[in-house]
Length: 355
Image (cartoon, rainbow, N blue to C red; front, side, top):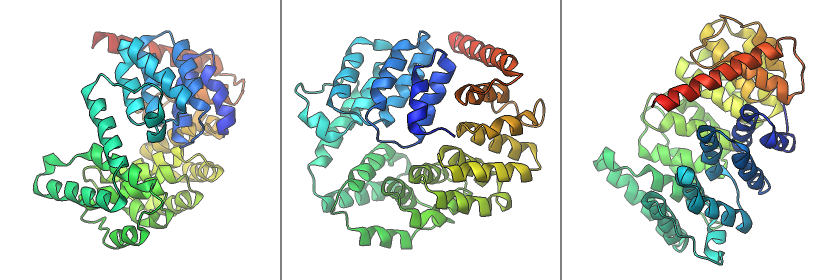
């Protein structure tokens, strides 16, 4: 496994495949390192393929920015029409204090992001009690009409509330007393959001149970919340539950393991892979180990080639190539895996061009 500092250098690697892996990896660490955005901008400029440049730009909304990088992204939004929607989304979600203090007012051109930024500015000026009432209103509207649930607003409210020093935590804890993973509603969705934003590890058990439920929003939002926590305790709980649970749980929990960038996650994934006895489990677990950038994925993954995993999920050879490169391992099959990786990239590009 590589640290954030070690992974940063791969954002400027000569191979686009490696740069994109590094971009995804760094975003999933939940880091607040402001030095990463300038590297993303360089990686974006380094990418010659228009389609893959968009992938780098798309990740920028999840990164911390300072006044300098806000200005640089703003210039990109004005000058690069192809990816303007990615840049404007990143600006719409940038730190509100930086947006407000910008020497020149940030004026977005895409209505969706103009509305988001306007809403964020509005709620930043409201007191915490009013914001809690506002969410309750959103929730009540949704109960009467499912289609009216404004999920984007719920996410924005959760983020804003989580940054309030005067958030009444006793009220948040009372909400979780009523959390029903067996019969979820929009209350539970918001609780997932706030649990992730506040990193409320004490409610990990409730969120983990929600991973097994097939209901709009709840399993995915539980997964995202657990990833935001980046907690060894969460992955230890997953290990105890994993093999006894349904496929839905195993799918979402594998993502949590792969995106929780800790040595404990690596240890648990290796242990679970040794116990896995189905192609489905092999697939979920080996790709999660690759997402961690673990060199242990190479030996374990090699054993699954060519047909011990579901190749419709992703290319294991491509992932093993990437993991070998970032760990500086000169594997005997490295060139073979590289050829497969770039054949896959060529195929993806061809499909996108046809669309």
